[in-house]
Image 1 (spheres, rainbow, N blue to C red):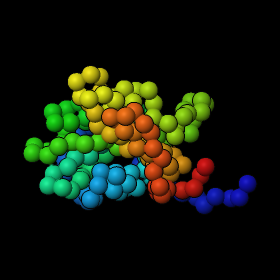
Image 2: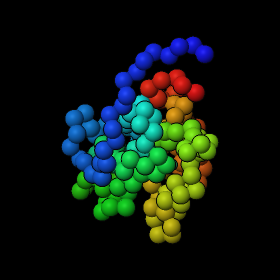
Image 3: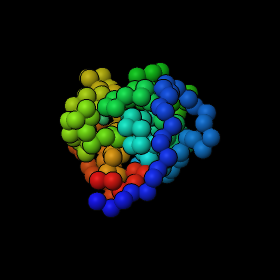
Image 4: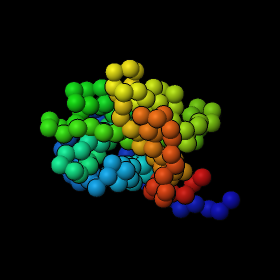
Amino acid sequence: MPKSRPVEPPPACITINHTRELDGWPKQGSTAEAAARKALNAILPLSVAQAKEYGGVIYTVKGRFYALPPRTQCEPDKVDTGRHEVNHSAPDGSRAVAVYHTHPSASIAGDNTDYNKFSPSDERLGRGNGVVEGDGLDDYLGTVDGSFFRFEAKTGRTLRLQGKLDNGAQRL
Ligand SMILES: [Zn+2]
């Protein structure tokens, strides 16, 4: 085994259940995918280092797309992104279109995780038309190995997106 560089331990996880104002946020892009990529590149290294899920909501206003700052409840395998809140936690006058979240762990309590798959609960939350079951928000996923996926709420399809995300290290 090659010797790895000593790394600073990550800061302890602190629950963040809402925040609109945070330096450098929201991340913006010309598409929801572009905003999701910026958001995940910004939070995935910390999420992986802490082995805690993070996620948030992406909204659109005036043709631009914005990813709200990431939330976390410091759980290894779930996060409340704010999608259940009024206007899916997006600002008044904007329209929520998607969520993003992380799968930061290859194993939890000794069990391997399907980190490169949306969980049944991820799919249930999004799938549907907003009346039946899910809220119809697409879901962008960044995982421990830097993979990037989109779950399409309308079709229930998962797509692997081009280009690796920054996971903080090439550890897998
Ligand atoms: Zn998930």
